[in-house]
Image (cartoon, rainbow, N blue to C red; front, side):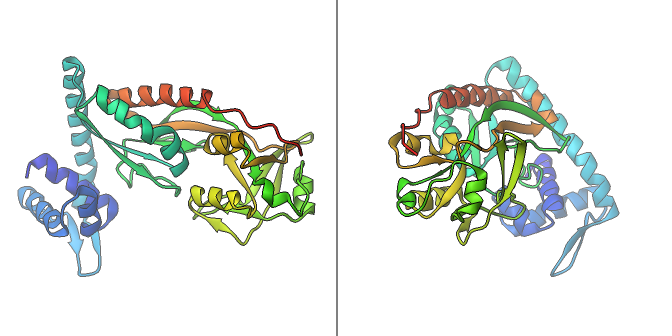
Length: 310
């Protein structure tokens, strides 16, 4: 294995704190990951990790070497990017993260078209509704809804996405359809919650004449998968909060109807976040520009909701 490959394995072992986790990330066995670390230690003449049967911790030398190894790989990435820029044939792998809703409806179906234009760029798409950590998951970029406060990343704003509360018409057969947040609370409606560690959607912030107002909602049905909530809503099990692009087809067909239209939720920012160094990588720039244009067009082409009576 090359010295560069050993460095990449070392960095992932250091960041993930486990040979087996780093092996899975690198698509190698834990034994191979351990062997690569051993080669590095032999080359450097120092121990990089203190190992026991149950734990692995970097030594002081390992922590120092980690910072240097990062700079080495960043320099290699920039050099390869410069060569690719000159040759006009960008190549390599891109690791991209996104929530399930964005990934399935706005990104995944457009990746083959990007691949047709740039056949030597491989795209590894990872979808999850849990909070994405670019560093831990070794991603080149991630598409997100909402503003991140981490100043270590650059943010490419794509669009402000309207959101709404909605439910199936059948849910209102034997109950009133609320038009305001106050009615939502007073009528004791069933709310379908998108909840995972760190999620805050159990507090819905709605626009009112008095300004933003927070409504604490509770439910016996919640999931960390947004598509599960949509299925429950379509089955008439309650009211959910969604970006319009995720449910546009159901609003157009009348299978879902808007709720609390006098107090709608605030729009949320759709953006792409990425480390500063990725600006120097032509394949990253190409993918971001391609997706920004494609997503904007997809949002512009969303069908209009059906006209329904309250």
